[in-house]
Structure formats: structure tokens, C-alpha cells
Image (cartoon, rainbow, N blue to C red; front, side, top):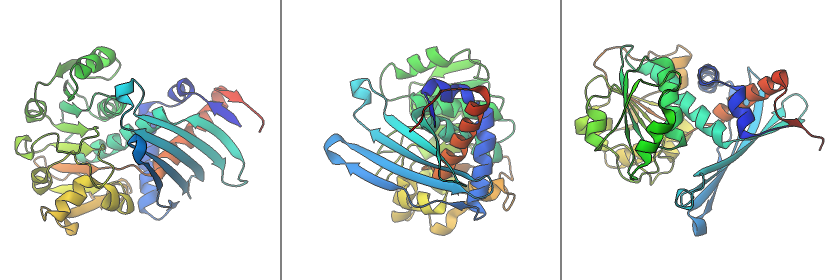
Length: 328
């Protein structure tokens, strides 16, 4: 069994590779080529936390894995990561455990890759300006992913915690593919007013920007609100959206507060959900059809992303001899 650290995971797979892998995983999911039980959440109210157990098997690629991920909302105040995770890769043919790998970066990578897939299928080809809400690990991979599929020139960064946006920019500026012009936004309205692509990666329970401030033709990736009570996106944004796309019907319609709250308030109806992203990736439905469309992608995460990316990381680690081999 191979043990892979965060550094090993980072070395094994690029964002471009992850986007291609996640695109195929979504296509398998939406064409009945994946077995994905509902993830099991264990709420830890005493610590304002939740631990999730997420298994998946992709039939075509034969990737099999389970992720254990803990989200502790008080961790950032303790100078600890919001998310800790472990992924175990299993040989689908024999049941043999093949690898255990650090899953925090893998989660950020595969979540960013999902937005990369959605952006590639739904954003305008001439998109040049981005807005990122949430200057953490997820915000970082969101920017890297959308930069991998569009030639961005400028990005606005907004975070509700003072100083985080400035630190984010200092850390990421100059990296390959990152927009040459990076700015902190003094307000949500400033962040979104010119944006062609908006990514929200926060733990907000109230909308992070107003739908009245977005322009026609914008594409939005919303990945932060993963429970029915969380909300990053207001009802106005969803009412204005021409296409609402989700990662999976079984997950988003049960867990995505952005959608659940809008549905409960009557701002949108179930028939306003256009597609799963995998249906577009598989060629069953069209992505963007007009330059002035407002497109919206909501992801709460799906275990097929973890299984597919983890298997690719394991294969790369075997090839490049990354990590440490142990006998159980």
C-alpha cells in the first residue's frame, strides 16, 4: 500500500490533468456509469463541524475510492485548515487497498477542477475578468482552474476577513497561468461588476453579492454552500440565470442551500434546473449558446470526483515512485 503526503499529491497531478479527469468522471456519472451511494454526514455540533464519508466506483475507468473529510468551521480562527481529509484507493478487481493519501489538497484540486469543467463548457470564450469570493485554499484552486481554461487578464479577490485577500494575492501572483493583474475588491459590487466569471468559495450563510450587480454574459461557479442552511447566491442571481447547471441531482437538490432556499421562496422552480454538468460533458445537452446568457453552476461535490482524481494520483505515484510503500 502506498502512502502519499500532501506534497506527493501536489506533485502527481496538474490542474489541467485534473480538469480532464473530472470532466470524464462527470460524464460517467450522468450516463449511469457510476455507483455513488449518498454520502454519510456525521454532525459534530459540539465543535461546529461535520465529517463526511464519500465512496464511489466509476464503471468505465474502474476507479474505486472512499474519502473521509472533516470540515471544522472554527479551525481558521485556530490557524488550522478548515478541511482535513483522507482518501483510500481500492483495487476494484480484488478489493486490495492500494493507497492512502492526504485528501485536503485533493479536495481543493478536484473542486477547482469541477469549476474548470463548468467554466470550459459554460463561460464565454472571450472571458477576461474574474472575481473570486473566499481567499482560502478553495479560492486558490478555483482561480487556477478557471485560468487553465480561459485567458484571464484580471482577477478581483474579495474576502470578509481583513487582510486575507492581500495575502492571497501576494502568495499566488506570478504563478504560471494566473492573471497578470490581481486586485483586492473593496466591496462585493466592485468584485462582480466587470466580472465575466465569478467563483464563490466561502462558508457563508447569507449571499456574498447581489444579483443586481452582475452583468449579462457572466458565468458563475458556486461551490461553497454545501448544506441546506448555507447560502452564497441570492435569489435574484438565480432568477436572472438563463441556465442553472448542477453537479448531480441527488446531491445538489438535497444539500445545496443556494438552490433549496430559492426553491422554498418560489424564486425558481425545479424545472429551471437545466442539466447536470455531466450531461453537457457527455454531449447530451448544449452548454453556452449565446454570448449574453447568464450561466450558473452549483456544486456540492460528488465522490466520483474524488475517486477519479485519487486513482489518477495513485497511477502517477506508481509511475514516478512517489510516497512510501508499506505492508499492512
